[in-house]
Image 1: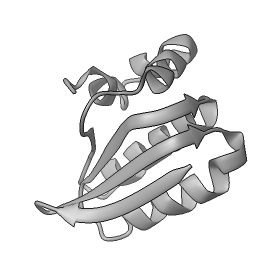
Image 2: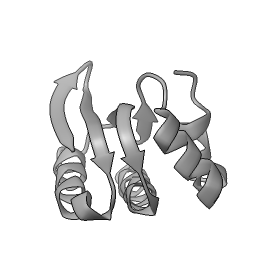
Image 3: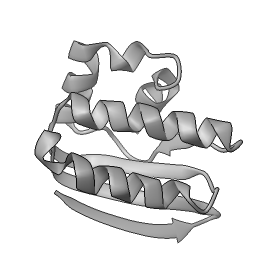
Amino acid sequence: MKLTQSEENGRILVTISGKCTVEHAAALREALLAATSPGKPVTLDLAEVEDADITLLQLLLATAQTLEKRGTGLSRQGALSPAVGEAARISGFDQTPRLKPFFAEAG
């Protein structure tokens, strides 16, 4: 898994590529916590995620909840990778109220 973080247009952009599975949960959690700490909206680019499981989806939901409590939000840049889209559909996370807009956004 590869993570990059930058700030653009008043938002924190986190680009994630590679495998986002349980083996990478700790690193992904730390990256998402760091992204939420400035209190700015967070945008994720998941277009290059090759493998995803429920761990990624749970962390996305936790991130969305944290940002909502702080009065900001979570959005997506670009298309979802097929792996993320499939994991979200199979698990039903794409229908979770806090994540439904994230998964529905046009890439």
